[in-house]
Amino acid sequence: MVDARAVHKAYGSNQVLKGVDLTVQQGEVVCLIGPSGSGKTTLLRTLNHLETVDDGIILIDGDLVGYRQDGEKLYELPEREVAVRRRRIGMVFQHFNLFPHLTVLQNIVEAPIGVGGQSRKEATANAERLLERVGLGEKGSAYPAQLSGGQKQRVAIARALAMNPRIMLFDEPTSALDPELVGEVLSVMRDLARDGMTMVVVTHEMNFARQVANRVVFMADGHVVEQGPPEQVILNPQHSRTREFLQAVTS
Image 1 (cartoon, rainbow, N blue to C red):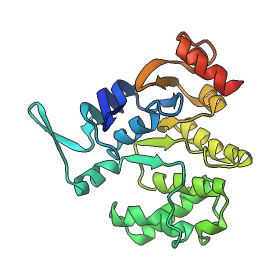
Image 2: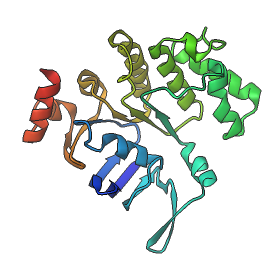
Image 3: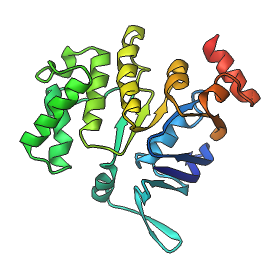
Image 4: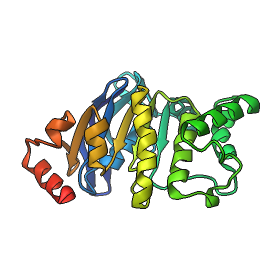
């Protein structure tokens, strides 16, 4: 589902990704962990072309997302074509990014109608079903300002699912939430994992990574330092840098 090869990304002189390789199989849940500034979020954003890459190649479900290939050269696609290819990729951000002037239901149906070409009736029925799925069936007519942080993030998950994605990307989806609201979002994500959704999750929630991930990838200084099953990487890390990070976040 994901095939990222030798991905490099720099901002000026700051080399954020230094030849990162990452593969994710269909139905797999992969958690990216590591210190701030390690490149986790940048890598996640390159997967749906929210960030361009300086070198390397990224395939999602067998296709380039933001480029077309002509021989050995890659050419960036127009934004309209990129948007079409992004349909199969759902993304949930730290800070929800809901439209404050639209109701919860309107937030969810906007993309399926405008980008996906669904009828309003079809998009509305699907949105109502997704709100039930994330435990917010009664909140369709509410506005984002009337919701808690956990509710907003569950709406953001429903909005991403409304495009029927093949893969879901989560960028620290609980980091902006009060501690007592984290569980309700992680519960929805656990349900998605049980349903077989392919997921790449940047997270500091080590218990979630240990319980739900098929594979944990530890990043530091723009490199993948260590990866493997959670019982190996989290409970028995082989690399000293991984051990230092886990001691810091669990102490």
